[in-house]
Amino acid sequence: MSQHPGPTLAQIGEAGLLGEIFARLDAAARPGTGTDVLVGPGDDTAYLRTSGAVLATTDTMVRGRDWLDRWSSPSDVGGKVVAQNLADLAAMGGVGTGLLVTLVAPGDLPVRWATDFADGLVAAAARAGVPVLGGDLSSSEGAVIVSVTALGEVPGQGAVLRSGAVAGQVLAVSGPLGRSAAGLQLLRRGDDDRWPSPEVAQRAAQLVGYHCCPDPDLTQGPIAAAAGATAMIDVSDGLVRDGGRIAKASGVRIELDADALTALAEPLAQVLGAQSALDCVLSGGEEHVLLATMEAGAVPPGWTTIGTVTAAQGGPGPGVWWRGEQATGGGWDHFGG
Image (tube, rainbow, N blue to C red; front, side):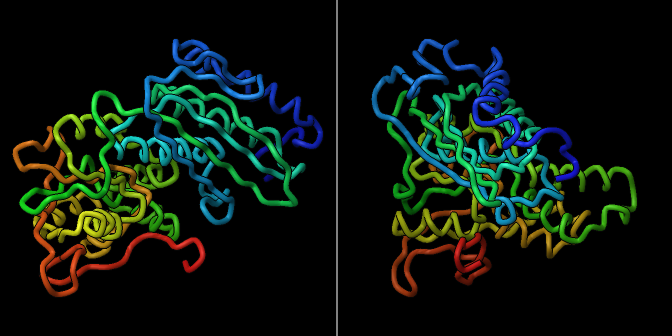
């Protein structure tokens, strides 16, 4: 923690920390500025006006498990926990309406860590146009844990589930794949002084940056829903695993397109090599772009078709197929690794 000098949480207390955090909810993100936020931070709860059905999701990150201080800044952690929550809303075709934030930390955590975390969180929320509504603080014996609960709504149509894929449709992705996994590989290798050109070095730095603080295009969820997406999920555990969740929920098979995925791996290959790049595209998690099934003629601009949906008749049943074989792998089991 030496990179965060200054007072600790124990030295300024809960009231002092809340004062620091509330001061960071500037005009770009402060609740109360929008007509749907009636009461923001400072009361017993936030108070919202809703138009009907509500989306709700939550994610938790633990220091040492979900991030390492030597790789991720507190601001990165704040941005990442916002992105992964709002991506879940986008995967339902929704948009965020508010964020609730929890911080659990030991008393010796520097105040600077907490305020930098809040800065990153507020900046990510402001970019998405989602207000920070409030949250909770608690102490620990050493663990640093952050959690965000995101609320949202679906504009104009019902939520897109995982279970609507139909044989004859295509599988498409809203953006690049494998960036976060590639960045993690580079951090583990620690070989940032080996690049053959400044262009490759810049690409490597971008991959590391995306792993530490992903910034997916969250507008693509409602766009896909409006285009008629029948099933959707964000890529948090890898293409194969998350595609498999759509396949299982819908009772179908998904046949991945080798040429399309090889093309998606090419920007990573100059940094990782061809095979590692393809592995990142197939199995890399924490990408938070969207996978969706839809009619072939409905794929929105900027999306890439990467597979087809077929009937799951006979054999092993629903799943993802890659080059003629059922594919498995990807993701992280919090208890099994």
